[in-house]
Amino acid sequence: MGKLFILFVVMPIAEIAVLINVGEIIGGWNTVLLVILSAMLGAFLVKREGVATLAQAQLKMQKGELPAKELGSGLLLLVAGVLLVTPGFITDIFGLLLTLPFTRNRIGEVLFTALNGKVHMSGNMGAGGFGAGGFGHGDSNQSAFGQDDDIIDGEYQDKTASSNQSTATDTSLEDKR
Image 1 (cartoon, rainbow, N blue to C red):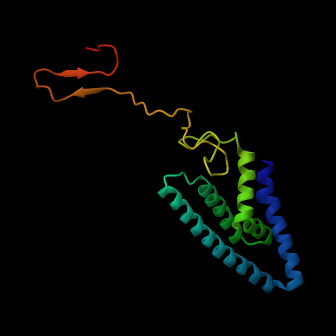
Image 2 (tube, rainbow, N blue to C red; image 1 turned 180 degrees about the vertical axis):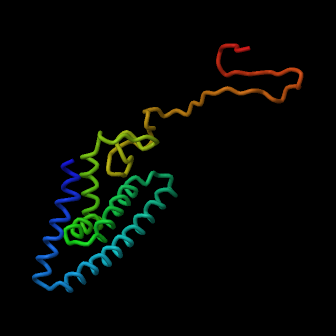
Image 3 (cartoon, one colour; image 1 turned 30 degrees about the vertical axis):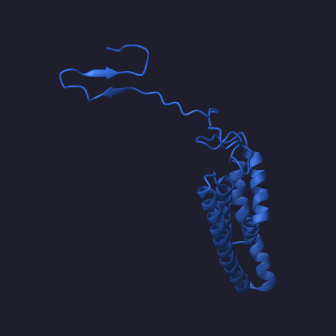
């Protein structure tokens, strides 16, 4: 409740207060122009960084590696884009921090450390989080359940026998006829 209160009540009030103060200093129309320019610049930067991150992810996938760091960066760039196009200077500062590669990587590491153990993951992402090369330090060769084997258990029927005799074959040790 407290985090949502800050996000939806305190943050807009702080943004409005900053906009009013900046408007008193440089003028109302100049403030509006500055907000529009910051949104345009932010959209350009996020697009540029997003394309670079996508190219890095494709290179890793071509090598057969999991692009975990790139996926995390892409998520942070999505948040940065939302923050940068939201009118206000406070959100623009946070969005710009998420757009720049060196601050985005540090923020990603801090977020991963804070969320480690609180997020349930499934799939082949490794025990340590985002896997090899990502924000975490997991082993990307190990499955989510800690096994490295490819055992598949199942049953089958041989349909090649004559129509008068139906032969059922079971992979288990018991005869189920």
